[in-house]
Length: 307
Image (cartoon, rainbow, N blue to C red; front, side, top):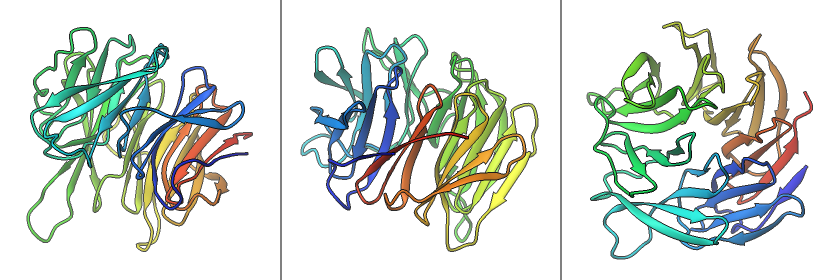
């Protein structure tokens, strides 16, 4: 187990991401910084252009790191994405919307590392990293708050939250999409107070979502859940991630724990309390041999997955 300390204590670590080679980890925090960790010795450096972003991602070729520029920036009206060149050590920001309608948590590179998809309340937009051109929102993609894709980028899942009639829960929906055209291929409804995480297996065979106290799992060829797990109403699930081989699903809970589920039987095979507070994000390393969690105490733990 490796404990990474550097973010301000008691400031939540919003998001973590492993580099494609598994040697580095990036993180964002409520302290307004983005940090790049060297996992060989646990050292870190603060990257320019930091933000309270709830999403951070490496490009598949390992050349760039991207996150949202969010909150606390005087005079900024446009919604922006920060692009950090890992070789040059420099950060540029690109405006992707005229105004900040909602702080969207998801940003996702295309497999060829030449474009970037990002969530927006008005819909999913594509940023061309060569021309810096931003596409109009995809049709039928409003209300998106989460994005996830398969390892080869041939399937994309979007998680949506819609405002219901007064007195009802928010309406939640997942949509499996063609990543090139954005057209939905399948839809699933989720019941709960809010959508807190979305994941898809690397091979695209299964989709999972956390919605308050409920964990849903669907086979992408079926309309009804193949697994549905609930916890008591005092607790709720947070972010989740499939292992690279699709054999395990890691799920955070607000009782300061992370659970591992086997995806063949949907049984719990491990429970961890790494003393990071309530988990905000959990991710597997590309080789599946390690996982990382960041939480409300401002700490990150990287551990060996030996199941």
